[in-house]
Image (cartoon, rainbow, N blue to C red; front, side):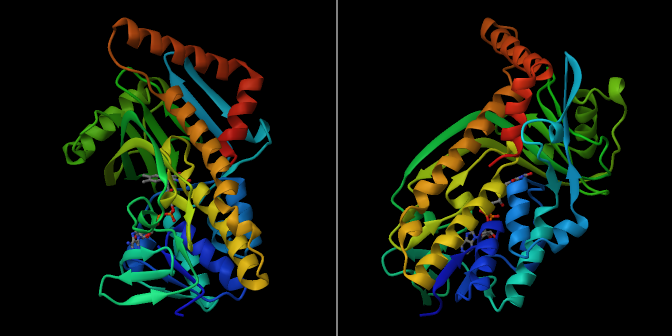
Length: 382
Ligand code: FAD
């Protein structure tokens, strides 16, 4: 056997899992298609929920996060109705986000995993997973064998092909241009703007980098959005004439993200267990993806440790049943957020009806404490 647990993918799911298994003395090997430099620079998520911070802290993985992460406790909604803020640290369970760029977290997790005696093979692609014998076939034709395979290889990975699952899916019919600007945040709060031209979002990442989103037509070519066009549209939709100009800078990443979601059921088969984006893809509307990845990694690590160290299979047998309800809670809220933030353009009866619903929902969120508590609990909760 190469290792007890073979982990496909060195994203947040695979790395947290690997670190937790190493802490329990379990032999594991991570296989990652990309180079170390690539995964340590891949900017994606940033908003970590309290459950994620707890998982990282309890497992000795949060040094960088605590040193450099920034607390975030307020979001704002802008639209025809004006602007209102929700300070979610004072609503619901009183929880907050910690903003820490995903690539920084990945860098910390790789260093820790290697420190704990873990092995990662970078620049190595898994081309096939055998769910019965826990064998990985690699791109150079060689094989690795283990007792268990953790499929943490994201939405385009191969391990999900080893799980004969039903794919429950939805195309939300909305597309975002995801942007990273080399510019400081322009506002203290995460800001969601609802505008006749479409949605725009502002999310701080670091003192020097800000993530923005612009709703664009499906099929948009990101390269047609010059820096000038991006800033002009952000100024319009975020209503800079009313609330103040944005701090501009070079756009260092622009990519089109279709709001689609899917969930595999079940997320385990034979010796293969899926965690993170390989098990379920969630639209980025509520910033849940990395948080779900960490949640599943923790559940799987504990189940595998129990099986390998004590021969108790109970938790592993019920892994899928334990994780799926939590995935669905996040999917439900994400879907709710999509409806809150988007409505059809045009002035036909359907579009006007949907925009009136959207307005009523925003007004309720602005005025109704019970609605605000629901929002806060689900916005941070997993
Ligand atoms: P990944 O991070 O995708 O890691 C999978 C790894 O497997 C990759 O390194 C990949 O190279 C590797 N791999 C793939 N195939 C193979 C193979 N065949 N062999 C070997 N290795 C393979 N989430 C949040 O919680 N909050 C946010 O604020 C947020 N913002 C986001 C913004 C954007 C623009 C995007 C795109 C996503 C965002 N997300 C956010 C989602 C989050 O980034 C993902 O949900 C998260 O990365 C999932 O982690 P993972 O470990 O499951 O998968």
